[in-house]
Image (cartoon, rainbow, N blue to C red; front, side, top):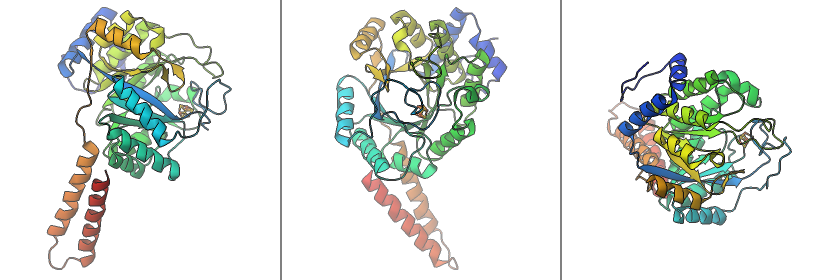
Length: 370
Ligand code: SF4
């Protein structure tokens, strides 16, 4: 089966499986062509993941050492102070990252002091002219909107695997809960970051099933992290084998073909990969990695090693692109609120004008604060 470059269409699960199973050289070649059509292949975005609250999570994700119910050797901590997080972000920027992703081991975002602190962190990091992403568990539409107003660009919430295999890995929340959070994020001004993990015992059909679910989101996610399981002692998946590098390459290439415009992030599992293996992932469409010696709680190659690899492969880390999507959307709502006042005709209830004025006032205030 051959697909024309630039072809944007919905693939069926069978077609995704066929793509995944193509002869590897053919697959890489096709994915590389799609990648070049939509992205600059010489650029790589470097992200830094900061665990702002580690461990003690009430969920039971079978791969995760942060779940309170598993006995793992991690250093737990409550929400880090604002200054600590800002300093970590500044250091990440000095070391070449243009993006920070803050992760908190929560089931869902709760209103209150901690959420207010996260909003302040988002705003502080956004002011450093870095792209900011958060992964804080399930989120409502109004919380997502507040995060956008604070300067957040992306919200991460992974589907992890296919809908069919999901229940083998997680029982404390359903696939539909994940989709609902993604829907809430999409309704706010935020961009969607959602991907998954391979190597959890799933079949190729499940890998394709996950890509099917992601690619059928409308619009498709702007960012898709592909993780290779890092099996951690004490978790239910501790016995899983290391994911073969060819599986990672196939998954990256298939993701690139199925979602041509998205940023495909080569995420966890890079410590097990050679430079050559990673080079094939970049060739096949990965355009972002996570830097730093740790990815939340699991090991990752250090910044020096990555700098060496970029220099060898001729890859150039990108600067943050100008992106005020959240603020732009709020501005658009402001215009709409004022329009609805302007077009009120005699006979319309005064309450409608008053409501429009109040809404415009609130929006102006949030714009000023953002
Ligand atoms: S993956 Fe997230 S939600 Fe699941 S146990 Fe870990 S911290 Fe909790």
